[in-house]
Amino acid sequence: MSPVIIPRGYTKKYIDGKITYESQMNDIDRAFRRVSSNSDVVLCEGTGHVAVGSIVNVNNAKVASAVGADMVLVANGGLGSAFDELELNRVLCQHYNVRIAGVVINKVRHDKYEQTKNYMTKALMQRWGVPLLGCVPDRPYLGCPALYDLEKVFNVDLMVGAKHRFRHYSVDDINLITTSLTRFLENLRSKPSRTLYICHITRDDIILGFMAEYQRRMKSNGAEPPLEAALIVCGRKDKYPVSKEILDMIMGLDGAPCMIVECSTHEAMSKIHSYTPKLNIDDKARVNTAVEHYEPYIDFDQLLKRTTSSNSSFNDPDGISYDELRRL
Image (cartoon, rainbow, N blue to C red; front, side):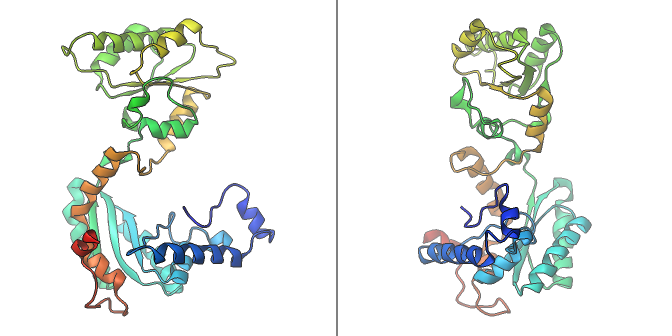
């Protein structure tokens, strides 16, 4: 947890003098010292670009300078736009005398991978004298929200299907149901099994059809693949109450993920599309996939050498290796 949290109203309190720069820096210093005293390695994650936090005078570059941390800059794939973004961050690091240990380029298109890696390596060494520590191809699955994430987005729990809350869904395959029940069932049977559907709370026929298809698949004894779809039902329950019969049927089919959210279908889709899933310790599938995906593409030995070096040339012979770190 960050020692400085900036909720709604925090910025105004800082500008009004109710929160001081000294109190913030003291909290950061205490937190860093406490974690450092019990850790072999401390990783400080900055939020957004290096200037984030400037309005309250504790941007990422300034904090890195205060705690003596080297900076690893991360940008999404590309050449020109990525380098331009990195340059803006580099200038602020230079202003606060923060060493840049290296750069990681993330979410690189597979067909542009070798080109991006080759030219970004050259550009960084020619312009900055800094290595490209990692060039990571895109893995769309890592950006797919789980039902657990959607519970947080809408501040509700799944009515049923809680055992599938860590099942992930692509936001590119969300289906807003405005068609007839017949067309919906055709869609349900032709689309990939793991598809996220959204309907309005007044569509009893769609809710019943979804549950009935789930039940039919269950009774097929393996003749058809199981239905892994999920249904989000949108609408104000006080204005559009769900009948007791429908609720009883939903609750009676534990396994078909379904949640009711208090917003319009448009708002629901907008919230899902604008949400960026984060790694969660309970989401073991996503965490394991992230580790397996990123580890081969990042030069951890070079990273550790440059972030544990005590001299400005990053050539400390006593630097720890990645294998040694994993054995600690």
